[in-house]
Image (tube, rainbow, N blue to C red; front, side, top):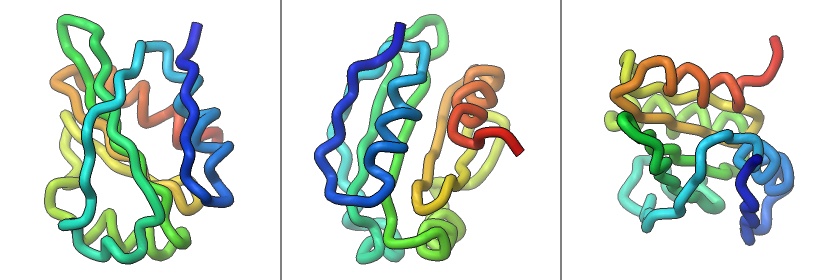
Length: 119
């Protein structure tokens, strides 16, 4: 299983991001997303937002391709909606910022771990 996701954003990490998203075991549906009002939005090359339709607890996955790791980190720290909690967490993988939200804490952990990779 997996998602047949194609991202048309000119960025060095585009293929890596597609691989991460294709490895999500839940069906992903792209939803409208506008990051232009985010802090440091000028350092965002492109972004996507997805909703899982799995019940009882769906998840929302937001991914941003940024100019660099440092820019992605600054964006993550500057935007209040990304505050880490048991129901929402963000992280970085190179210049990719990912943000997962769900009432299901296990689903948040599972999706975050896909992007975190092996330490």
